[in-house]
Length: 382
Image 1 (cartoon, rainbow, N blue to C red):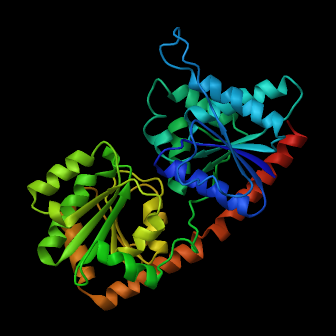
Image 2: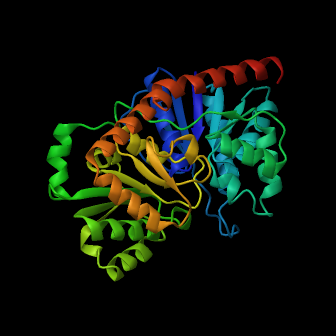
Image 3: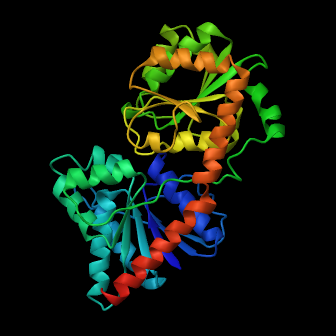
């Protein structure tokens, strides 16, 4: 198939999933066309069957705000026509689904057919979409999509409830390439000494450091673990709450035991160095960072929110807690790291969960099948 993909090319779950999906589809022989404002994060530009089409926006002085939405819709239509796309797959409802709708209408006026699928990732529904000023157009974009997918059952149900949508929403969960995300003992032996001494445990956190991720809770949890045993913390990512996390780390006296690594492209090499992933988010529609860690044999301590319980089975492949319960998280992390047998069992279960339920080899065919169903349905009933 010839598939167009639009996403936010920034450091965040929806962009990562969209990019990884394109890479996996291209590896399976499909022709992938990314239509975005910048090359997506994690895209090297060296992958076969992948093409990048930049959306350029006019800075005409009349426009107080550059009309990105219109430029994107125009570029979608151009690329679809020039490269005979079979389908367009947009990630994050706002504004991408409405842009895709405009592109579809532009092409339809010229007798050309372009179905599009919208994948909902979470904050496009739970935060932005429920803003009263955006709710009607978000609902319209979703309803007008030729197909809609959600990354968890929780997000599907929340979308139906919040937007009063009765049409079908297909649940296709996030995925991880289990061959890329795995623990390579030789690499770990080489890289681990860069961050910790042999007797020190390593905890990790991976996010865009937005308020919803509660990165100061990560510092609180780590401070409790560090008070009980030699430990280090890898803070992977960056964002608005980084300075608050750094300040709190200094106030709690653990600043010198934390590595703030900023945005990293090689997270598949960093995560296997960790013993535990800390994900204390206020909301997660799925929890991709936890899944990537689990694939590397790293259990996650997380909050019981959103779609996280669809990924983490409490007490089996990770541990779940109420939002903000840093004392319980710190105690549980310390206990688990102090019990080698229990830790080994949980780490093995984490890896097995990723392999059995969320490997790319299992999830990508679900997308391929869904694309084909939408293409077939819209070609017979445009």
